[in-house]
Image 1 (cartoon, helix red, strand yellow):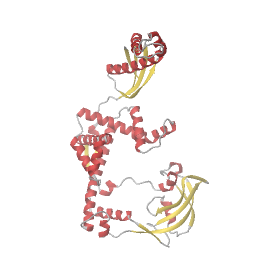
Image 2 (cartoon, one colour):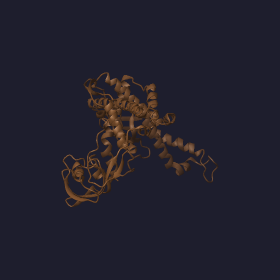
Image 3 (spheres, rainbow, N blue to C red):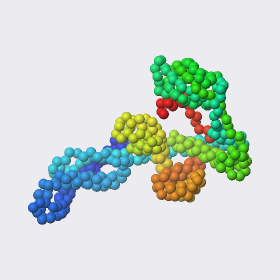
Image 4 (cartoon, one colour):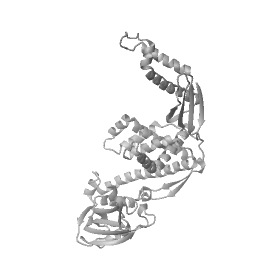
Length: 445
């Protein structure tokens, strides 16, 4: 058997395998002999049909099976011989095969990139330092009150903080635009669900009022199609409602399953939860910086096979509509998910290489501690633990997260870390949704 390897790119290889005709002929002959001993042919006793007849009846099928198995077996041998590990299934291209000729085919595939990790000393991390204050707890209680807001219809002009119910329609240059219409839409004035200029026009209106106005979408607006354009809106306001928040009393505390201690007990419970969230938030920020630093310091080639796999994985997680072989769906997934997929693939390769180079293995005690902590947040912790024990894929995900944490710990001992004073709200507040997104919500709904 002859094997040659061609380097098509940093990661792509083409292996050409040539199998002597004698080996293929023997494989076919052996299969025909085996088949003749058990074949049932009319007019002959079992196993007594002439080999020539067996070849006439089953020759093509036997030849196909022999070629397929020889290709599979020989490719495995060739990969071992050349010390190659394909990522994903190789693309097999057989050469035309004539009777008595050698069997020849090509296998094209990607391999895991070879690289040396570097640049740890150049990674800088800014670690936030904060604590949960009484003011933070006050703000959390106010948030909990707002979550239990009841709305009461009022007969007066709308003001900031009120909820109004509106119909709206907008046009740009006399044409409708996606998301520019809504019926019976609730807007809390001052919460920036709509653009500020839009909400400001609603302040001072009463029920049954109608208004028309022009509004320009500012430069940098998150919907590119309307950025910098002026829309003409017609709005009809149906009702104005005033917020009524619950009193902070014993009943309020009990509504959050605080059985003892009243408001003081609620504040203690909130502090415990907020301190845990703060620790997790700081850990997440530090981990994000460490991983980004690792990425920035190591620009490595990425196998397209892994990127395609990760795009599909992300699409499933996001319940992306199945597209099968639809090229448009594939292109859309690549456009929306490609960047994150490449980031995940790169981090996976870097983390795996660092773990292998430094002999870092998953700490089973940390895995158990993680599972215990996670299960404790549910009403039936034992059921959660049992589910993970019975779901290998989910448990593998936890093991991967723990290994990442171990890698971060290893790197933190070698990178430059500076502490920065911060606050609970700054660390925990996620990126805000761009103002005005509600104008375009109708389209998605």
